[in-house]
Amino acid sequence: MKRIHIVLTKKIGGLFLNFNVNILGTGGTRPLYNRYLTSVLIEHNGESFLFDCGEATQMSLRKQKISWQKIKVICITHLHADHITGLLGIVMLMAQSGDTRKEPLTIIGPIGIKKYLETNIELLRVHKNYDIIYKEIIINKTDSILYEDKRKRIEYIKLKHSIDCVGYLFIEKDKPGKFDIQRAESLNIPKGSIRKKLQDGYEVILNGRKILPSEILGKPKKGLKFAYITDTAYFEKLSTYIENFNLVIIESTFKNDLKEEAKKKLHLTAKLAANITKKAKVHQTGLIHFSERYTLNQDLCELLDEAQKEYPNGEIFLTKDGMRLTADKDKFIIK
Image (cartoon, rainbow, N blue to C red; front, side):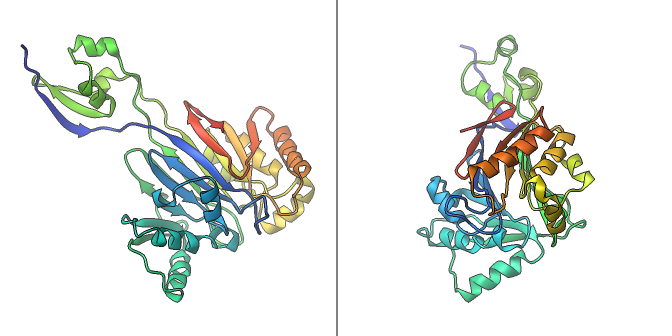
């Protein structure tokens, strides 16, 4: 019997198992009984990333049966109450859940986020068994890449608001291409674990010969690109940051009849939000951060109608509390 010698060497890339976007809240300023404050959670290969954390965010996590212990990174856009007042509750929740969390929690946000949270932790004498790693953004000085691993990276972009405010880009790295069975057979690569290791991105040495994943995998597939943008006024350069993104969740605080108020308060109308994603040729646009004045479905439908008329060839939808979007090839499916 021919002996096969296998050695695993360096891993290149990795598997991409899941990419879900969970809408925890969609409102601005104050929570309503049926609409919590704007917050979005990404699940990516067993890890969770939370974007903004207003009042009652932990209630949304409970309702949607999402584990807060899996949250690895929390990204805060700016230090306005409707985006941060739920942060302390999440930190305490993690600390009080049977002391099971051991891994550090990374919190990213503009200058002041550490002082805000640490002051409250000290005043309330919060005991926790895990560390918090703070990464405060000095706009125009901090490197745009805030987090990176083998599968993804998170970047920030400067927005235009009444205080320092950033948007976040969650960019998945390219995925392994299709496995070439005929090529594998021609190289006498046996079925089973060896092929799986190559698919997982590992080099292997088989009978003294090094085989690279690129030898049996097709052209890499483009990773998905997601953006979370709130709160901001309109500015021309914004669309350049999100060109050809797969999914953009973007604030749409006002209808167009209040465009002057939007301009004054440094927010977007639904029409302006659609104009930005139209210029960027975004594949899917989710509207979020609705003014508390819009309590009727008719109001929200009018917001959506204004956006769709501005970008008729784009896929635009209203986000809703409890909505879940699951990646399927190069787009997201609403569940």
